[in-house]
Image 1 (tube, rainbow, N blue to C red):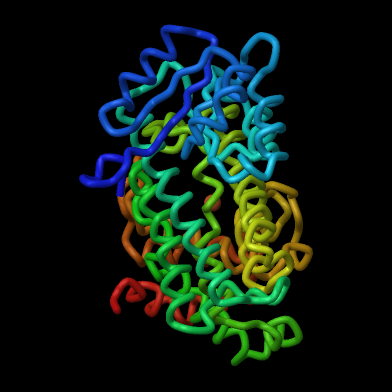
Image 2 (tube, rainbow, N blue to C red):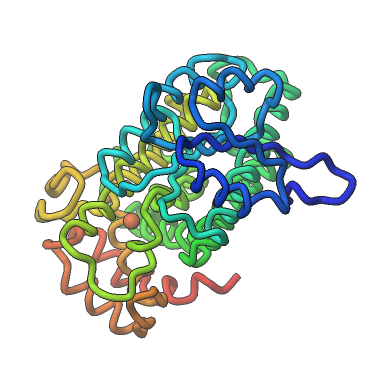
Length: 368
Ligand SMILES: [Fe+2]
């Protein structure tokens, strides 16, 4: 779906930048497909917003008088404009910019100098995401669900399809960035179920797992790497080893993923629902290690929520047996050996013991 569908009105994009060259370059990249309106300042943006009513705004971070941060605060606090997705245009790739931008409500970042293909893809993906969000919201209104009682997971076929549609769009977005099918591959959900069922059989973590809704948790687990949408391509797709600074940025995908999930929960008025609670814990803690050497918090053993301990193992297995820009796929037996070696250091020993028994099923979980 894009703005060029025949018979459909083109989608409107506003680009705000005080640099005329940037404006022209961005306009050239997008104007074949979209109606593009360029403005040189935030003041001009607000003057024209009511007339143009754009579907998306590309907003320069650094501008004289009112900068991008100030402008987005105003946009997000006005009910007329708060739902318009905003992409920040920035020359900096510092983690502070990400987290500040994300906190203020930016959906994505594009780095200067622009790459036309990448800019077009980002814009297209974000417009699709916005459509999917709107569609879920509309459906919710139609269903007349009471505030705070919304259960994003599938109580019926329609809502399940909508939720899957939304996640598929996210998955496409990540795939377009060269990350492979990260979401909805179904592998994570299946592997989680093997581990959880094995733990229950052995009566481990019974008090926690007794209250688990496994289908809800499995679906939420697919979102564990969602924060990677905020990691620049130069890092995500790098073939060589990451520098310490790059690795610091990569680590932010845990906290940023959790932040995005929190925002989704708020926007869907489902704050505190079980689905979002699981999703948050999977995203935030899947890189913690049993011995306390992981990130983002350096939590140790049982202080790491069970969601994080389970996902740590599933994630490492998947990374080892999959192709990545910087590595080939390793064989299943090699992945098993690495995980067994990580018992009690990287991974929860009880979970590794279950994995040892179900590892063959892990290998086959791509097969329907
Ligand atoms: Fe991750």
